[in-house]
Image 1 (cartoon, rainbow, N blue to C red):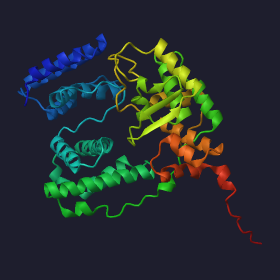
Image 2 (image 1 turned 60 degrees about the vertical axis):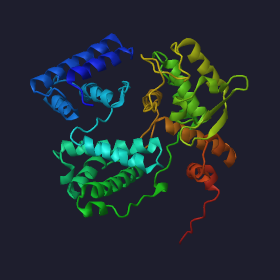
Image 3 (image 1 turned 135 degrees about the vertical axis):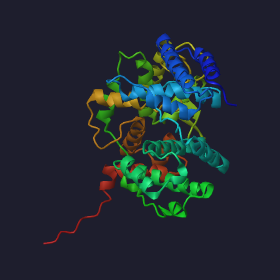
Amino acid sequence: MSRTINALVDEATRHLATLCYSKSSNSLYHAVWRRFTDFCIENGQVIPDRKNGNEFLAQTVFPANAVLSYKQQQNRIVMCLFDLAENGSFPLATGKLRIPLPGYHGEVYDEYTLYLQSKGFLCERTIYGKKHFLKKFLNFLEMQGIFDIDTLKAKDVYDYLSSSLGSVAATTRASHLYFLREFLRFLVDAHDLTPSLAELFPVILVNSDAVLPSVYEVHELRGVIAAHDSLSRCSRRNRAIVLLALQLGMRASDIRTLHISQIDWRNRRLSFLQFKTKRTITLPLPEESMFAILDYMKNERPDSDSPNLFLRSSAPYGPVVATNTFHQIIAACFKRAGIDTRGKHYGLHSLRHSTAVNMLMTNTPYHALAGVLGHVSANTTKTYLKTDYEHLRCLSLEVPHEC
C-alpha cells in the first residue's frame, strides 16, 4: 500500500530508533529525510516513489569537495524509506558502497526478480548475483537518458559493454554476457522487444583455464598475519578472521555465519554447514586460530545474544551483514605488509587459494585437500593443480632443440 511522505518518515524514524546507530548517524538520517519531505511537499508529491527520490538527489546541491561516497550515502538514506515500505526494514549501513535500485526502471527490475524466483531451482546467491548485474545495467541506461525499456537498442547494450566491462577479467566479462543474454531474451518475451536483441550473443566463448588462481608464497602470508592493525577497534576480530581464512581456507560466507556453538573446544575443531555447498564439514582448529578467537571473545566481542561468533564492529551489534566479504580487512593487511599484488586478487578468497596451493606443494594428498576445502566435485579441486609448479615441472616434456 502506498504511503504518504510523512507516514514513510514516521515509520522510518521508529525503525531507526531500534537499530542503535550513533547520535551523529541518526542526525544525518533525520536531516536527509526532512529535506526530502520538503522537496515532496513543494512538488506536490504527497505519495512519493523511487523516481521522486532520484529527482530529489539530482537536484541536491552537494559541497564542491563532496566525495562520491558521501553522495551515495545520501542516496542510500533516501531509498531506505522505500526499502522499509516494501520489505519492512532497510539494510544496515555497511561502509560498502551499494548500487542503488533503478528509479525509472523499477518495474522491470521487479518483473525480472519475480521471473528468477519463479524458476524454482536458482539459489538465493545466484539470484542476488543476477540482480547485481541488472542494477548496474539499468542504472547505466538511466545515466544515458534511456528511461523507457521498450526503446532499448543493440547499440545501448554494446555501449554498456564498452564503457563498463572494458578492463575486467575474461571470466567476469563472460558472466556479464550470460546475464545480458538471459535478460534480453526475457525482455523480448515479456515486452515484445525486437527479436534481434535476443540473438546478440548466440555464442559466448570463455576459457576457464585462462585465469589462474591468485596465490601468495608462505613468507608473504606470514607478512599478512603480522600486518594486522593492532590499533583498530576491531583488531582482534580481524586477526581471527584472517587466520581462519589462511589456516583453514574458509570462505567469507562460512566465517561470517560461523556460530560459537559450532566450535568444539575440547577436541579443537570446527563443524559447520557450508553456506555454498550446503554440506557439513569438520576441520581441525589450529592453536593460533583458537587463541585468536578466544582473545576476541574475551576482550573485544560486544555483549550480544547472537549465536554468531563474529559481530559488527559498530552498533547495532548483530551478525556481520551478508554482503561483507572482509575484502577491506585483507587488502589493508596486504598493503601494510608491502606485498606486490599487481596482476593478482588480494581479497579473502586469495588466502583460500594460497592455502590450497601451499598444501599441494607440501605433498598433501589430493583427497585430503578436497576435504579441507569442502569441494563437492573433484574438478573444482583440480583448479589448484595448475599452479603447483614444482610437481608440474617433473611432468613437462623436453622441447626439441633444432640446430
